[in-house]
Image 1 (cartoon, one colour):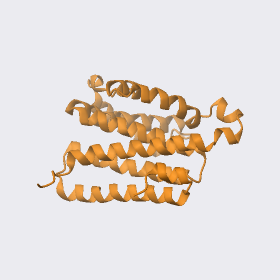
Image 2 (cartoon, rainbow, N blue to C red):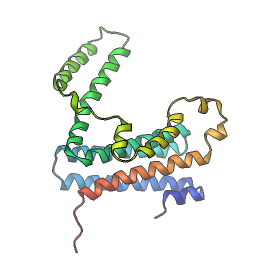
Image 3 (spheres, rainbow, N blue to C red):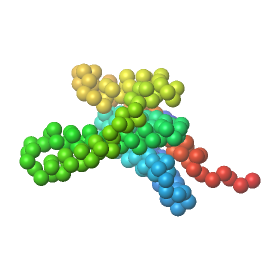
Image 4 (tube, rainbow, N blue to C red):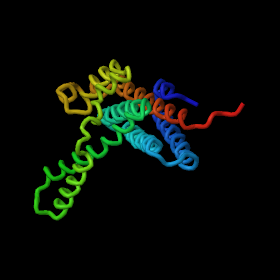
Length: 223
């Protein structure tokens, strides 16, 4: 089976896409077995959802092969953060609870953003959104201590701070409109070397996420 480095070395774009398709297929096959063999509980649901999100970002990565470097950077950053989340929730039940709690926090922030950007405060949907925010507030009341750490603090707690700092310096200039990507020449900004870094690292993060979940949930082999 060719690795992503092999595909990059020979510059075979179609082979690289096939490698990503193969990786996604392996994850999907595992997810199908996962649903059949594992009981539904909070941890298993979260891990299943992480794999589903990994597939989404790998699909973005595949599209980015023929697209702008910024899309590759987005996929890489997302798969890195997803890998940190995986390692974080697998570290302890407390971390898992914090992550699940964060879902309500994120939902509230999303609804607040919708209301802030709404051009019509009298819209009936706005009333429903405010009611939902009030409901979420009731669920979150007195639970601030369970707040999820920042990505940087999460990386630090997982002994991945150096990786975070290095990647942040790189992807920050591509995910956000930086002076460098705006003013530097196109050949420099979208150089094969930089694109390959994103392609290689994103594949590594996805593979590590998948292997951690698979090794935890796969039954031990006989013999």
